[in-house]
Length: 306
Image (cartoon, rainbow, N blue to C red; front, top):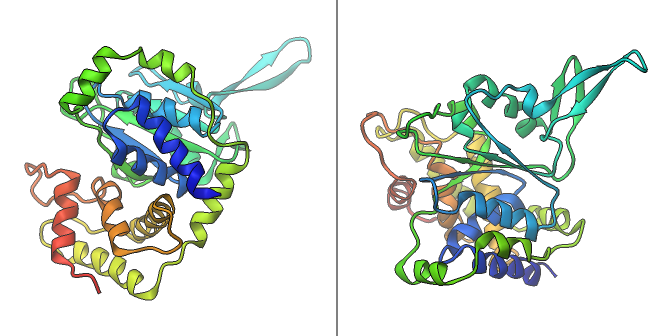
C-alpha cells in the first residue's frame, strides 16, 4: 500500500515544483520520519510553494504564519481574552494549533518570537499562562528562511536549528524547468486544484511503517562511524550529537520506504546525510561557508562503508 501512495505524492508535487524531485523526496522523508523541515534559500525559488503543496497532498490542516520583526509569541501561541458576559478569561488558540505550520521567513522574527516554536517542535505542546495544551497529531513545522546575509534577518540559534530534522535548499531551476514554468499555468491556481493523495490516517500509518524499516547492525555501525568522525574531525567546532544520529537513522528509514524497500542501505544514509548534517556542522573557521553537500561529501569520503 505504502509505495503507490508515496509515489503519488512525489509525482503530483513534481508537477508544481519543477525539476526538484530530489528535494521533494527529502522533504517527504523528513515528514514521514516525524521531523520538522527547514527550507533555506533565496526569495522566489519556491520555498513557500513546496510547503503548501505538501500540506495539500498529505491532507493536512494547514496554517501559514508570516514572521515579521514586530511579531510577538502570543501571535503564534494564542492569548486569553476577558469575556464580560461570563466574567471569565477564554483562551483563543493561535495558528500553532494546526497539523502543518508554515513558519514563513522564520528568521525575520526576533529570537524571543522564534523561541515560541521550541516547545511546540520538541514536545508537541505549548504552555501559556500556566496551562499546557496539546497540539494536534500529526504536527509538523515547515519553516522557510532567507540566507543570513540578507538584510533584516536574525540567525536561528543552534538549539533551535537542531530541532529541525532536515534543512534543504531548492536552488534555481534548470533551463528546461524554468521554461516550462514560464509557459505554464500559475502555481497558485495549480495548488488550488490539487486533491489530497492520502486519506486521514494514512500519513500516521506511513509514519508507523517507517519505524519498522529494518536497519541491520552494520548499517548502525556506519551511522556511528559517520557521527564519530564528525566529532574527531578538526574541521568542525562540534560534531554531530546523539539527536543528530537518531535523525539520520529515522530519515534513512523514511528514504528507504520512499524507495520501496523494507531495509536501509548505506546509499539511503548518504542520500539524507546533507539534509540532516548540513545545518548541524559548523566549520571551525567562521569565514568558511561550506555547503551542506560539501560537508556531507567530506564525511562520506572519509568514512568507509562497513
